[in-house]
Image 1 (cartoon, rainbow, N blue to C red):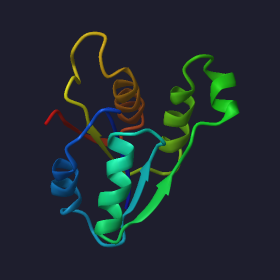
Image 2 (spheres, one colour; image 1 turned 180 degrees about the vertical axis):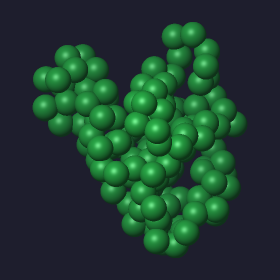
Image 3 (cartoon, rainbow, N blue to C red; image 1 turned 135 degrees about the vertical axis):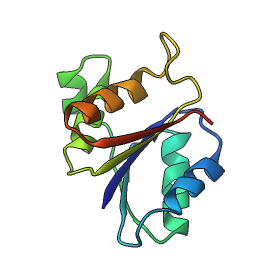
Length: 121
């Protein structure tokens, strides 16, 4: 199973990530981005569980495709790696003007009929 973990760059609750990863099979691969907060915590917690981790970074092509918003290109590329499940962690998810990157991933995943779970705490 391939699981994308996404969310707030200021996420500081690794226990919430740990809680969700505890339900996954040992052959899970965690895919995440290159930001502090959720991505950094996701890598550490995934390794605690012995999961494979694929940390992806924004590229120049991402910035060319989405000027000023390279994170959108990264989101598209991460989802294109055959993701089965998205775990989104953002305390402000659903608040107007907040969680733009997380909302972007969730919308793309839902368009592709990928299961999404959203956590605000």
